[in-house]
Length: 465
Ligand SMILES: Cc1cc2nc3c(=O)[nH]c(=O)nc-3n(C[C@H](O)[C@H](O)[C@H](O)COP(=O)(O)OP(=O)(O)OC[C@H]3O[C@@H](n4cnc5c(N)ncnc54)[C@H](O)[C@@H]3O)c2cc1C
Ligand code: FES
Ligand code: FES
Image (cartoon, rainbow, N blue to C red; front, top):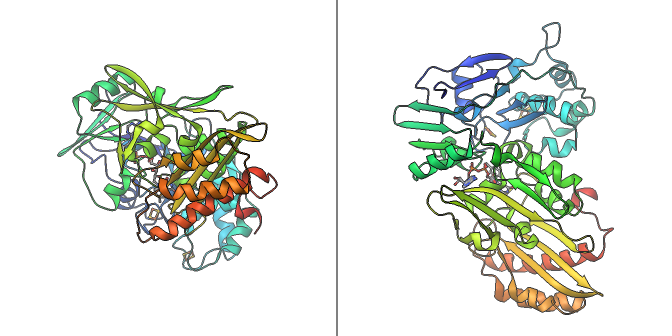
């Protein structure tokens, strides 16, 4: 049977929304209109974390997300916990809430509910505190007392509520329809029938159009429940990632898998933990932004993308998928099914870079990735890719040629940096002038050389501060 009312679990209790509720209402707007005003609205753009709520996943994992970007339709069959849902066993404030108050971790208190929810997820998930907090902005307390609280966190052991199996659903509201297919054939049939519909994965790009620009899309096809888009498999020669696997899952795998460490370090800087909880590789490819962080490494690795439609599947190099400024090779009726990332050979040099105004939670000004295969100290193959220096993320063929067939030394890198100036055509915008981007691209080439040849160099500036 096809579900017609949005149903989810909120703070451990089932909720079914009245038929006709707009499926693109943001979770934040709905919570606040429902009287759950503990969750705050700061920016409505995914940047400040005041709206952080936590998805309680099957198996107990906790994923913080930005309620301002998530749409109600995306919550079908899922479990959300808000700050109102945290309690101590005696019904009083949760130990994290108490610790925030007692450590003076809260002054005006506007950011506090979001920080408490981030902390609640972090208590279970662990990892770097800096990384956990990068998506939560506090303007007045200062982070030291908040860090004190994070140092004492303990998992409260609360079990996740049971979640129903994903079932197909279709939600209608005046002038709107939201499809939630549960199989690939259903998805492809819907795609063929509704070419104008928004294809929604994590919604960290599309959610902005609803939350910030107040658009009300007439039709949405959501990819959340199609199992083929959520497969994640590591094989000896490659990782194959379903297009709708969130970055958080990818990052955990990249950290474990040989050869993908540099890509993991880069993904750890893509947005925040909240953005990575929803955002996907398929969305980065779908948007085809010239500054998509995930794209230069895909180009350097020689990744391929598999597209599916009712006519079958086709696989093409990512290089041929990215056609220009926010333009990709998706034909009508097609969706991105998966991405295959060849594993760099054990003796290959692989490095990734991102230059942005802030270290965390910022869009790149310039991004770069390099994969080099050396044979007896001589470059046998160079794959060099840049973002932010042209209409699309792209390889740098002249710079690659300047490296190939030579020892990978400073002289070759100098020549490649010179040749690179013919490969790129940056524009000036508020993130940087064209001249600055040219300089940065050259500098990154030198840094990639240092990274690749001096393995003891810290992988990230944060390791030396
Ligand atoms: C606060 C904030 C910070 C951000 N920081 C970064 C950052 O540091 N680096 C960065 O690169 N990006 C960043 N982004 C942008 C965004 O998170 C990424 O582009 C992300 O990869 C989008 O994925 P998504 O699943 O959320 O895409 P969605 O918003 O769901 O979709 C984006 C586009 O891709 C299409 N699409 C999605 N999946 C498919 C598919 N399977 N087949 C065909 N088309 C598809 C959609 O139709 C849509 O056109 C940020 C966004 C926000 C709001
Ligand atoms: S309100 Fe700022 S991230 Fe959602
Ligand atoms: S306590 Fe005021 S913004 Fe954090």
